[in-house]
Image (tube, rainbow, N blue to C red):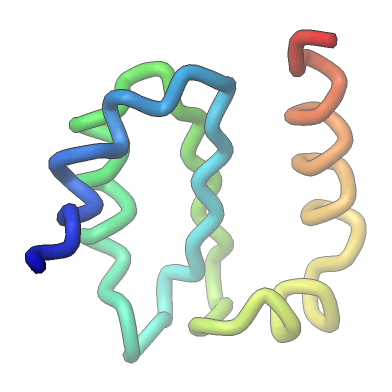
Length: 79
């Protein structure tokens, strides 16, 4: 059983999509986030400068920006 690949399915997501990625991520290169956005032009991409892989580090280092981005994203979701 072959699992679907992210680039093959991301464009089929039918709800607003927020992509969040740290530019110093050494586990998943930031280029992957740009590739996802190319395959899902409806997605909003937010790159966090100086942040690595974990959302935990984003929350600790840039809490207000992360909160603002999440609030803005959820404010436009359909009911």
